[in-house]
Every structure is written in structure tokens, then in C-alpha cells.
Amino acid sequence: MYRKNNPHQLKFENFYIPFSGHLREDNRWIILAGQIPWDQIEQAYGELFCENNGCPAISARIALGALLIKERLGTSDRETVDQIRENPYLQYFLGLKEYQDEPPFDHSMMTHFRKRFDKEILGDINEKIVEAAMKDTGNSNVDPTDSKKNSSDKDENEPPSNKGKMIVDATCTPADIAYPTDLSLLNEAREKSEEIIDAMHKPFTGVRRKPRTYRHKARKAYLAVAKQKKPGARKIRKAIGQQLRYLKRNLGYIDLMAEEGLLLYLNKRLYRLLLIIKELYRQQLWMYENRTHSIADRIVSLYQPHVRPIVRGKAKNPVEFGAKVSISLVDGFSFVERIDWDAYNESCDLIEQIKRYRQRFGFYPESVHVDKIYRTRDNRRFCKKHGIRLSGPPLGKPIGHAEQLKEQRKLQHQDELDRIAVEGKFGQGKRRFSLARIMTKLAQTSEVSIMVTFIVMNLEKILTGVISFLLFIWWPLLARHRGTDLNCSNHRLAAA
Image (cartoon, rainbow, N blue to C red):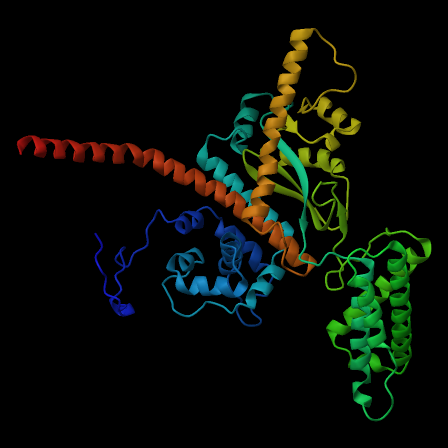
């Protein structure tokens, strides 16, 4: 059976609101708003501004809340503002007192919000959120309040016993750049140098001749190799040499024009590009002359010169281009330990991460679950000194009878299973959220985007726990209500 509905849409004034003008307390945004320490964030955010000078800035709750909404919904800056304008729950999450039809800020303010926060402030916010969540649940294995209770019962000189499980790993968060090759970088640098020459010559158009750049010939020589499916190494090297000579000619003209004081005609963007192009030319010329493909602080993008190649050794992507992030996972909550744009050995940070664990919770972890690269002699020595069990097989030949070796292999297998949680956390950040491609362009804003992603993942875990708790409470009531309805229907059938 099908009943035809009225094809004419009702006017929005007559649209029925099911909650009678009130918000539901079990809404996800209402729950998340109560899990964030807005007062402490407001205090840290207010220190960035003057008290009596200038126009009042947008509140910290709106600034941080907008970044959290954008990351959780996976929308652009424009779409985020539209969602906030249309959704009363999002406006409540931002701290507005009543629903308003106008957007609370322009979409361009999202960039300023990312610039005002840094990774240190967001790291403190993340720790406060996790600490409050662990206190509320009460079933955490590493509740920070337990250390205070234990220290009052024991001798003050006796250190607290180790407790909890810490999982450590690192990953790369790729930036939104094209895959860099030496030839494509030189061609792009050459085109931008021609744009710089045009800007410096513009005031003298018709007065004197513009320097000859041979841009059409250079473009044709680049495409002759770039369009080939599999150009040989000799052809690629010849094309790189040609682009280097074209770029050298352009930079020579720019130096001559700079001596005449024509750099004043460049805007901030072009002047920044000029400095990057000169460094790129120096690196590419050195690699070309020395027949190598590696150099310190290698530039792989003109517009994001802070991005470095990170060799990961993965089967799909052996080299990634972005920030390297090291995190620790405790009871499903993630803590960002380090964000760096240069490649580094993550095993050197393990001791500091264990010390930060003690600063957060008041005691060392009982066990640390890491990958093979972390199991260095220094890390093993530190863990043994403080009674921490480091996952993985011990050094040397296995010692013991068959039963002991069997238990050791079983424990090592369980350690590897426990370490899967951190891989799942990376997968959640890259598949569900934006860690697979960081769309922001500046180094600071990219770091803020990474930190916001891990804060949102921690909030997702808190939200899942709250919903599970509500279902645990409501399910018996719903089952009882359904049972009552079923009994009433049976009595009616019997009476009929």
C-alpha cells in the first residue's frame, strides 16, 4: 500500500519542531559540550590579547568549537559556517545563548582561529579533557587520583608502584602537495621566476625592453620529457640541466633588477617565493653536480617549503611528504608527544614519553608496547631500571625450559595484539578524519589541524562511552516497557 503525500512543501513557519522549541539532552553535541573545560580554555586564550585595546575578539569557545566541528563533520571552512548557522545544536556547542539566523563569524576567520592556537595550548587542552574523562568513568586503569591515594598510604620516600599500559608509535601525516620530482620543481620555479620578472618590469612597460626569458622554449623542452611515459635517466638528467640553466638566467636578471631597487614592486607573496626559489636552485644545482638525490632540508614544495620527505618503508608509499607525529595511547586515549617536519628516529623519544606518562599520572607504566625500532639498548636499560616491562623478545638466546618459552611466546603474541590499538587509532585518523591529507598550508596551522584531529578522536571515545552507558541504563527500561505492551496485547487477544 502507498499513500500519496502532498507534493507542495509547507511554508517554513508551519514546519513542526518535534522537541517543542527545546534541545534534547541526549544529543551528541550537548554531551560533547559538557566534556570540554571551556573555562580553562578561555583563560589560556585570553592571555593572547590585550584587555583594554582594540575590538573584542571572538570567544575561545567559538574559536575552538568551530575547529572541532569542522574536523568532526569533515567539511570545508565555508560549509562549517553554514552548518553552524543552520543547526541549533552546533550553536549551543559554541556557547550561544539562543538560536540565530546569521552566522556568528565569517568563514575567513577559521584561518585566524588556527593561527591563534598552537600545539602546546592544544596539548594542554587534550590532557585536561582526558583527565576529566578518566575521573568521570572511574574504571580507568591509570586514574591520576589513584596516585594521590597510594602516596598517602605508603611511605613518602617509597615511589608509587607501576600501573597501566602505554602504547607508543609514530606515523606521517601527508601534506596536500603534488608528488615532487626534480624536473617538475625546477619547471615550477622557472615559471614563478618569470612571474617575478614580469612584476618587477611592469612599471617600465613601454619604456625599456623586458629581459628575455625564453619561456616558450623552456616550456616546450619540459613537456618533451614530462609527457613521455617512461623517460630514461639520461633524458631526465638532460632536461634537469636545461631547466637549471633557464632558471640561472632568470635569477641573474632578478639580481640585476634588484640592484636598481626594483624589489619594492614585489608583494609579500612574490618576495617569499623568490627566497624559496633561490634556495631550491642551490639544492638542485648541488644534487645535479654531485649526481645524488638527497640533501639536507630538501625543499619539495614551493608553497610549503617546511615539508620534508619522510622515508617510512611502507609497501604502498615508501616515501611520504608531511609532518612526522609520535603519539602514546593510554586506555584508548591518545596523547601527541611530538610533531616534527624533519625526519627523526622515534626511538630516541621513548624515555621522554615514559617520563611524561609519570608526570600525567604520578607513576610509571607497568608495560610499554612498542615496535621493533624502539627496542634499543638505552630504552631497555631505562625500562629495566624502573621496573617497566618492554614488549618484545629479550636480547640473546632464549633461556628456560619448554613451558617457560611457551609462556614467553604467548606473552609476546599478546603484546603484539595490544599494540594493534595504536595502528587502529592511526587508521581512524586517516580514514575517518583528515590525517591522510592535511589541507592547511602553513606549518603552524598544519600542526593545529593535527592536534585538533586527536582531540576530536578522544572526544569520540568519550561520546561512545557515554552512549554505551545510557544504553546500559535505558535498555532494561525499554525491555520492560515492551514486555508490558506484549502482555497487554496478549490479554486483549484472549478476551476477544
